[in-house]
Every structure is written in structure tokens, then in C-alpha cells.
Image (cartoon, rainbow, N blue to C red):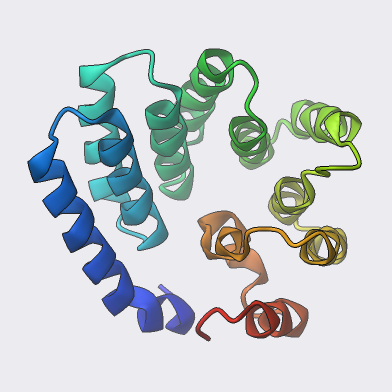
Length: 193
């Protein structure tokens, strides 16, 4: 885990504790359970994220967000085949959610399936419209290709469009954390460094 994530660990611990309280109040809430899996993912606690996602899927095998979280955790654990399978389910169950498509493209890239990843990237670009460009999602796919320049270009576009800065916390951007341009963007959006 890099120094930046270590500096956030206390905040993640607090958020996870609060989400666990919410889970105790409503243990059958799919959203709460899935959000807890996402917090584990952001905290780089991949085994816990996998366990939480599986628990959520047991409650509802058709809940796309749980498959999306599970696929991302598998991807971070370099379980690429499992990641692709879960993220294909997430895309199908979500009706083609851009977030799920982005993560599937990342899994394809990690699996050496660049053509499939590129097709998903191009489809996202075509879906863009004046009100939403999917800039952060597109940037994440470029980051998975190792194309830091394109990733940063798209992140800057997202910044200009006032994207949700929390996206920068996602593991899909870990490869950019040491880039001074990324560090500057993190500073400009007000995230802890």
C-alpha cells in the first residue's frame, strides 16, 4: 500500500466502522452491504471486499453493484479470469452501466484482451454527450492500458466538467498516484495528500 493510501487509512477505518453500524441496523440492505464492500476496496482490504461482496450476492444474485465490487476486488488481487466473469455479469445485470463497463474494460486489459477493452472504451466515448462525457471512466481505462498521458488528459476534462473528485480514490487510478500531474489534480480537488 502506498503512502497516500496509508494516510487515508484512518479515515477509511472510521467510514467502515460507520457503515458496519448501518449494516447492523439494516443487515438486509443490499446498498449498505455493497457500499461496505466498496469501502473495503478503497482501503485496499481486498479479501474483506470479496467476502462482503459474496455475502451481498448471496442475498440477491442479481444485484449488479455487488458483482461490480467483487469483480474489482478480484482484479486488484490479479484474479483476472474471475474478475472478467463477475464484471460481465455486472454489465449485463446493470443494463450496461458505464461504471461496470469501465471495470470490465480494465479486467480485459489486465487479461491481455486489449481489443475487447478498446471496443468498450470506444463505446463509452460514443455514449458521451454534452451533459456527461464519462471522462473519469475513460481516464481509468487509459490508466489500465498504461497510457498516463491520455488518462491525465481525460481526468483534466473531467475536472473541467466538475466530476465527482471521489473517483480519484479508486484503485483503478493507483498507477497514476506518483505522477505529479495526478498529485496536482488531487490537490486542486481538495483530497488529502
